[in-house]
Length: 256
Image 1 (cartoon, rainbow, N blue to C red):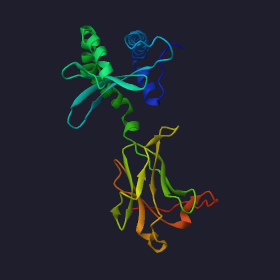
Image 2 (image 1 turned 90 degrees about the horizontal axis):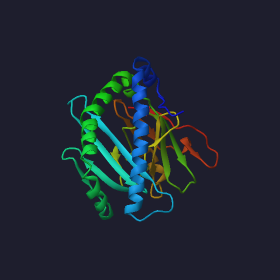
Image 3 (image 1 turned 180 degrees about the vertical axis):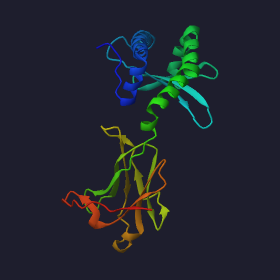
Image 4 (image 1 turned 45 degrees about the vertical axis):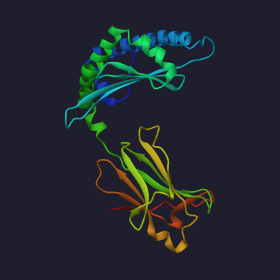
């Protein structure tokens, strides 16, 4: 299609009010594509890697604290799945996390025009865009969705997994407690993962090998979502665990 395409309802409304914004994005994307292609060729020559498949990635953006008004930008490059260079936008200097990237830094630091363009975009234009997006998509961005929480277990001797899915945003805390005290050594945390519908999921395991049957009632899984005062508390209950044996009883959630 060779055009940028909005994927959110609020973004479609923004484009309807400002059609030139979509044109700007399309031009910007093609410019970045050309830039990455040129830089990939340069890196292949510098690293003497003329054959095979190589990947150059760029991550850039900005953050805005709507309470303090502070903004700051960031831009990072990676090559073949390893960090390559980070740009310090305060000093406008490249930081090379690996020794082999030092020669790349020496070449890129001479590109004064590109550095000025990065400085303008990340310190001025990007914060303006971000504020505009918050204005149009604020209701969606600030929404909160509570999860469905379940207890899972592969076998009677394996850890009990407290699994939460369908929550938004991804600013959450999830942990096991015993008598109200958070556990650390007996638990294993898994990373937050995205769901296809834009929500998130997360799990935390509890090792029960040393937990006596009569003590199960002392354990609880606690889920805390940013912006929501009430915790979702799920008691460790054998009858509520879903396992490979076919137990399908849903866990009981307590709002406290």
